[in-house]
Amino acid sequence: MNNIFLSFFLALHVFCFAQEIQESALKEAAGFPVGSSIRFVPFMQDKELSHLQKHHFDSYTAGSDMKMYQIAPRENAYQWARVDSIVDYTKANNQRLFGHTLIWHSATPTWVVKKAKKNPEWLDTFMKTYIQKYVGRYKGIVDGWDVVNEGFNTRGSGYRKESIWYATMGEEYIEKAFRYAHEADPDAVLFYNDFNIERDTLKFNSMMKMVEDFQRRDVPISGIGFQMHIRMDIPNEVIAYTLQRAADTGLQIHLSEVDVIFNTHDDSKGGGIQLYNKLTDEMRLAQAKKYADLVQMYQEIVPKKQQYGITFWGFNDRDTWINRFFKLRDWPCIYDEELNPKPAFYGFLNALTVD
Ligand code: G3I
Image (cartoon, rainbow, N blue to C red; front, top):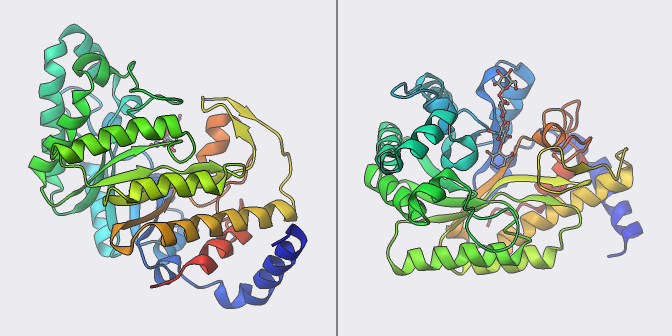
């Protein structure tokens, strides 16, 4: 389809169906759970946001509230109150609660890093206690966990060796985390989650080598999380290739942190390159197509029984992490800065098929 025809088609579609579709809930149109990351405070006190969250999503991922620096900010001081409130909220609203994330180098509190450096043997004991207390407390309540997040290098092959977990325990820390989580809740769906694996085939291959080794040795992994912070210029063919190979493992596949960025960046904090200063209609429509392509690939490539769901990393351009983190002005989400649905929303919605 050429661009002019595509633009005309999408514009017509949005125009004709906007009224009718405005109230359509993504969770009802999708044949798999749909979610968004959210900050419990203050966003849940924002009436408009919480209305949209309840209306569209049947899966809840905490943006930060369930990370280690929140749960164990000091030694022997576990903080469960926020997670308990999230549990009440998700139960009251019939939403699946997804646990993000147990072990992530970037969410490891300083006191843990310091103590592990002084006493390396302690880290394994701490990991076991932490995971088993946490997963055990929410056994049967948290449906699935990102057990280990971002264990591979930002680019290219190989483990992220500077992580305190790798530096102290070696690559075995990943396997141990899965075993500890499985012991605490044998029914929880356990994911390895990472970014850029949909586009960087060296990184993807490193991850797949680990996943396939885990499967051979019965390490209890049940899913692969593709964060999927994609840019408009990431080729669909590469995304389809990696999704297919991941799906071939038979594991659950979660698109766990979806957004679609126009500008570019070097993956580091503050590393944004502002190529576009304004969101044009043409860009809106192109983004709608990218969201639609992503849904189509997910539905066509990942067998239904392996579709754990699609989760957006925030669903509106006002609150998106992309602008803060990369120091950019971008528009990566399905809702705009005024909390109105964008063509991206309709692109996503209209690509959903229930069977
Ligand atoms: O809640 C405090 C607030 O009280 C304080 O005033 C403010 C001042 O800095 O900070 C607030 O906490 C921030 C928190 O997000 C809540 O917004 C932290 O500083 C900030 O570091 C934290 O950043 C989060 C980051 O992970 C680190 O946990 C981002 O929101 C969140 O989007 C980001 O998410 C990660 C995924 O977990 C893994 N994949 C990449 C993704 C984006 O970096």
